[in-house]
Length: 280
Image (cartoon, rainbow, N blue to C red):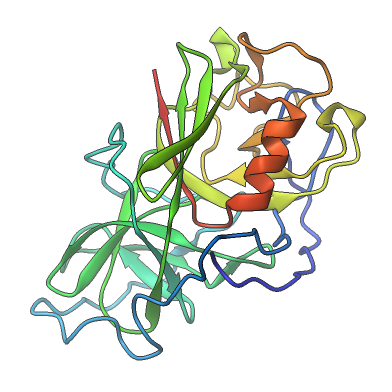
């Protein structure tokens, strides 16, 4: 599991997409989840691959930096957005780097080592010529490519699979399902976004509706920002506990509502970078 330090949240007025319309903060780094075995680095502090056969082009001036509330455009769609094949590597950049739309393609935005004070760990979905393709935060079903150098990878053991139609969430470790729970998902007008995303971090929210437990903030955002409740346009989808025993429905603003005991299990076991896939 990823070694993690306590982080102070940036003073950013943002919201976490949940079943209410109160204001929330971006994710933070939480306690290190328990794991039966220590996680080892897949690549060390040096470059994770030899020099690429295709050199990156220079980044143009004025590129957007991807943040908790700021996305970018021009990136390709995730070609395997419904795949439940576990993703075993997470990529961490060491400095602000341009991310490209293809191997040897055009730089479309910058990514940074952290988002709102939390280490950014992006699951790797493909590799080619020393480049790595990753799932991007703050935009849905999109990938970007990073040339070799100035990043490293860490092993990812866990995965979360949500079936909207069956109202289930399954926690998977090392490719084997561990537990499945009945959950509530987004209402028809504000559906939980489909496709692959990942855990950004966790937030402590003051409302009692979360049963006193942290929320897992995801990289996904509302598919239709005009459909969500007032104040949630810049929100991210979350996985959180719910104070009432009402699961197996479509009634949230897009979040996945969990029984408190189930949420505690996730908080104890999964960390930043954990891949999440939402299926119909």
